[in-house]
Image 1 (cartoon, rainbow, N blue to C red):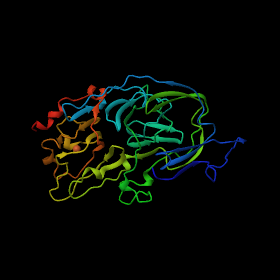
Image 2 (tube, protein in one colour; image 1 turned 30 degrees about the vertical axis):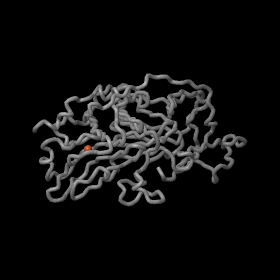
Image 3 (tube, helix red, strand yellow; image 1 turned 60 degrees about the vertical axis):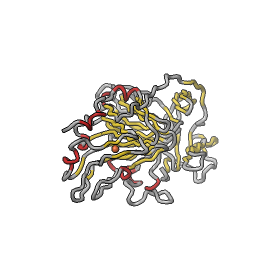
Image 4 (spheres, rainbow, N blue to C red; image 1 turned 135 degrees about the horizontal axis):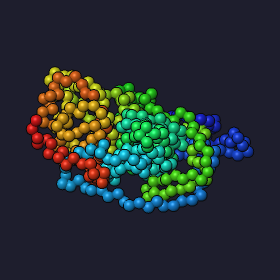
Length: 395
Ligand SMILES: [Fe+2]
């Protein structure tokens, strides 16, 4: 997020001595966290203890997750609500689709996660339902239904679920997760040359939420699970990593509610880029939110048949009436994969039914990838195998 933020106490000048307030003879250790070789966004954090002090490390071995190529090339319908609940948002997520750029997972979490960080890239999570507090070295962000949250690479964090999620007294946390091999950003065309979200962008800085106060937790010999480019390692830190008393910069976790995304509509049907919300290396993320339908005379409000020539298109249906998909089996919690090379569009009869309708209450998240996606075991476990033939049915 190219948007300066300052939380807690920081010294007036960068890289100058900053005495520990409770022990003035000692200095607070600095940590400069910077992306792309420190040539772009960074944050400067002030710790109570050395962030480098590990006392143990072990490799975490696990079976490689098998991926299945989309062959024969088919559109897929995955009923993600049929995946079993349980586990936490980090170790309990189920891999649904993946390529070399992005891994798309789904979690139905009932437990808080361990302390963790993903050093291989940013993570983008979408809260389909439930709630959690994302605790990080930068501070906490409360998350609820409809929130996206971007967790920058190498941000130590923990998903804290409400008491009762495991017993059923509180709702489970349903998360759609995209793990990038790089950084998730605001689409460049939404930004001015100096980094402000422009008028006409579908959200503004006022919609962005970040940590508002430091999070300091006391503790010794604390485990942190680190996923990195070559595997997973469990470190034991001498002191709890949540010991930052102040930080500033333009690199931090941030949340944006899909309900704050302002839809762009027109007299005739608008193309998918008007829904774009995030950009990642090799993929984009779009938000389809309740909106008035296209208002021109005889405008057809549902999408035309289309060939996504250079991308695989993934849609996650969160809520509302998916009118254009009536008769296909698509329902809340469905994920569709429409791969490059397959022509897709509305179900038979839905174009005629749509004309004259005033609007849609649909809520959906789309992830378009520029490399083909393979299917994880979770996808095969909940696939609706009749979907590919649904356009050939008559209504
Ligand atoms: Fe499409």
